[in-house]
Length: 187
Image 1 (tube, rainbow, N blue to C red):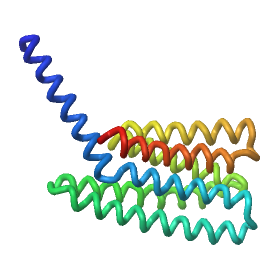
Image 2: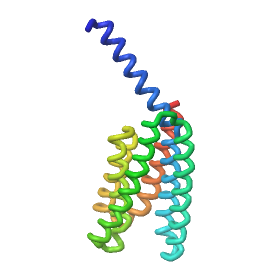
Image 3: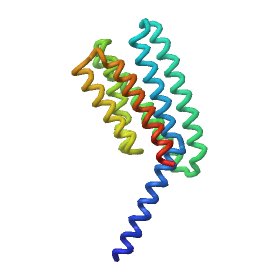
Image 4: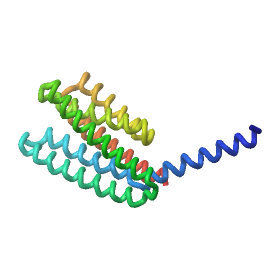
């Protein structure tokens, strides 16, 4: 292969990657981050600021908001995908999260960590899910998963009582920031 042919091939690959990033951002991946960032931001603050029963109801409402919002974004994303392979990828992504939730529940049941570690367990498991999905879908998803996991581990080790605030402001706020970045920068 000649040098100019190699450069032309690299240019084509670079353009394909840029188109993929734009498709992911416009398809709604950024919205998933914003939706679940809001859930974390409000939910973890509710854990700290409200009575446990009230916080439970807030989490229930937030999870319903997150699930409904994710389904709406997923349907919107599915309408933009014209290829059978693209639709299968969307179904595989949904199946991945369904399996992660099921295995997370099983692992929590099997490990039975104390209730004060529930937030840490869920956060590490969600971070793991983002990291695994990020290997498959996009680097920002991978980096978000790694950052959330590292944040939770460091804060739990150094300042365990600050974990809910860190997860709310840095975890939830960080997810919202990643979502906005994906929607604006990947146009």
